[in-house]
Length: 121
Image (cartoon, rainbow, N blue to C red; front, top):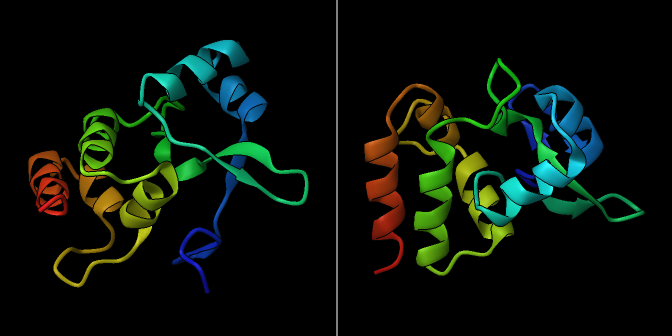
């Protein structure tokens, strides 16, 4: 099964932008700005192709993970599309305890960004 559809604990949760805005306590327009500023990633999902964000990109406080923005920029600089970036962040890696996103949550942003930079070469 595709890593974008299923996580280790079952189906991956995708949040439409209004739901992201509600969790963050901001307007939908500000969520769109966060996407433009590369602080979050979103893909069009479902039959209606609604722009949605994986719930894992938000911290326990409902805000984007702190280490995410710089990592998204590094991946984009390496030529990754938003879908490719999400796939890389959410794919389990044998050399990590989980996924690159799990490592970011654990405070290992320098290591993850080095790995992302290496993908460009």
